[in-house]
Every structure is written in C-alpha cells, then in structure tokens.
Picture 1 (tube, rainbow, N blue to C red):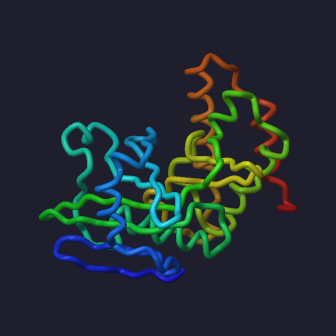
Picture 2 (cartoon, rainbow, N blue to C red):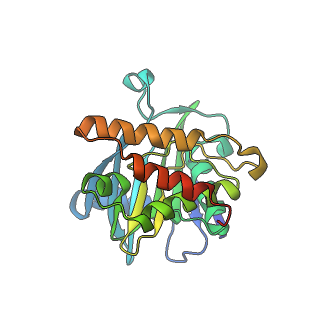
Picture 3 (cartoon, rainbow, N blue to C red):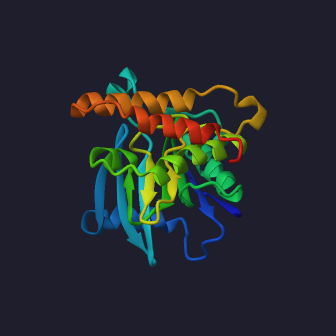
Amino acid sequence: MATKIIRNKNSLVLLNGDLSNISDSIFTYFEKNQEISSTRKKAGRGTVTFFRNDQLNLVHKAYRRGGLIRKLVSNFYLWTGLTRTRAYIEFVGLKSMLDLGLSVPKPVAARIVRQGIFYKAELVTQEIENATTFGRNLAVNNLSMELLEGLGHTIKSFHRKGFMHPDLNVENILIDSSNKIFFLDFDQARPLKPKKIQDSSDIERFKRSIEKFCLKSGRDFPKVEWETILKSYDNKAH
C-alpha cells in the first residue's frame, strides 16, 4: 500500500495511495457533513464517528489523552516530529500489518495539525461492516468454540509477525458475520522483531479486560472459554 503525504501550512495529511478517490478534502467533508450523516459511538477515551464518503463506510477517530492530564489538555500532544505522532504511528502500523496479511482495518487517511509546539491528530479507517465487539458477544453468551479458537490463532498471528497490541480489550476486538476477527486501536503500536515477543502482556491485559467486564455486569469469569483461547494460542500447528 503506497502512502501519500500532503503538506499544508500547518498540517500534514497521510493518504492511502491505493484509494484513488480519497484526497485530503476527506477531513473537510467529514467536518461539514458529520452532523447530518454520521453516527457517534463511545470508544476508549473518546468517541469514534461512523460516516460515508464516495461509496465507502468510514470511521473517524480523534486522538485524546488518558490519565489525569486529560483534564487539562484533552487532545493536544507535544510535537517531536512527524514519525512520532500518534496518527502517523497508527497509520503506518496498520499499513504494515495489512501488508503482512493481519486482520486490521484499512487505513484511509490521517491528519496531524500543528499549533506551536503541540499537535492534534485524527485517523480515518475503513469500517469493518456487520461486526460486533467481543464484549457484545460475551454479554449474550455468543462465544462458540470456532470463535474462541480463532481468537487464539489471531493473537498468535500478530505475535509471529512482530506485533503486540498495546491495549487489547473486549471492545477493540471485532467479529464480523463470518466469524473473522479484527483488532482495532493500535495507537502507539510499533513493529518488533518476532523473537522479541516473549511475554504475554497483551494477553494478560485482555484477561483483565474480561475480568473487569464480568465484574461490572455481575457475571462469572468464563474460565473454560479463556482456557480454549490460551490452548489455541499455544497450539504449535498455528
């Protein structure tokens, strides 16, 4: 996937070069049309917005801070160079993962806007259609053996290609109508050499996310289902 970089007065826009009908005007279009042709959904620290443009169903994400600092500065970051911005890292990371055959959303465009020594950023990806989160499937007890084994295999495939998810949780795992699994939200994810992925921090984070979900909803932790995921991950055949 080729990447185009467009430099304007105070902004830089990255575009997916494989999408000939996408230009930097996509952000202008989004700003002008989001009130009448979009749907917002809470996601992590902020909100993602679903919208349609040129026959494509897209998702817009504005990067927002976490922790206590978000009360003072919610969406600005210190500028230390383009390649260190969150939007650049995620856009390029998604590109690399797609090129490796991993199941992630297709990056469409990213915009980094500088304001003095700070910047704010946005990312547009192609929507994974007809999909629900792992959390939603857990809530309605829709966790088939096929799905659980597929999840273990998917985590393993990312590790084998040199990627760990920085925040694997029940809301950024999507399952489409054919049970294909996608991972979302690779903010700050950089590729590693596969041999350096020897810990299981993303798997443990995912487990804590399930525990938190179950505690909040008054459910028991799905021990058998969790063991199925781990067994599938450890299966040498995959």
